[in-house]
Image (cartoon, rainbow, N blue to C red; front, side, top):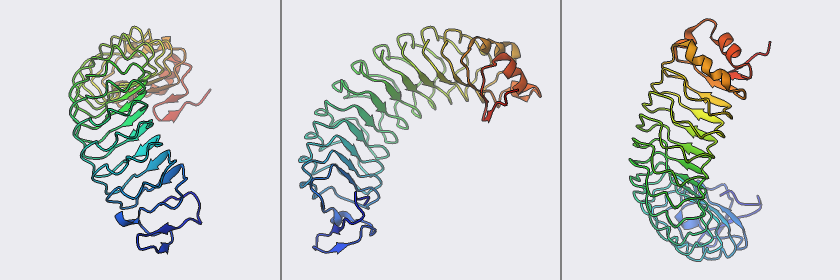
Length: 319
């Protein structure tokens, strides 16, 4: 049960005591310390949320890896700041209206089809909902304090309805069915954008994202490096597993430190020479490109970018 002290006991509904090592069932949620600030009920085989009313001060409730099918009986937990329902069997977002102080909500790995039921969570800062069955981004505009949104591994086809989330710093939309980078202009505070494993063919519409520090767009069908005109703060660029044959249009990326272009089609060393303008470049991945078959591959890269500390998965030996 992950109790705070090893001397704590679990009291069952039958009023018996047992050691905390026994797996919990849905009939075993009995509160031992009503003044606890954090309660860990991970891996408990819990099937129903109940008997939580005594928790008058709890701020963090962890219910990962259980058998919960419905969000219910949480209306008394108004002090909650963090709620984890990761990897359960939940199909609908509901029963959260009273959690007005919630700052972190994790509903990853469930069976949720729609983003809904978040109307009262105005203090929410981080929302995790990857690996569900969501097809549309919606009902988030009121979450003005949201800084992180994770919607990876869903069925989303379009980036939309994010204009009001101006505080957003991290947006994760990897492993969806997105075909176009768009509708991000208002997210001017975004520092991390992840769009890997989608259906993108073009890098575009990033001009307003001048605060970007990390951009992940690997495993798409991108053929050209382009439209990096305002990303002067970008430190990590992941373009691995695309269809790129020329290294170009990266001069504006004056802060670039990590450049991942493995598993592409770069065959011309003259284009690799364009990396010489990046004086802070520390890591380059170019394996599984034609240029990586050159016997002098590592040596040539070091001559092009003397600042390199790592080439592919191997650290550079300083000579």
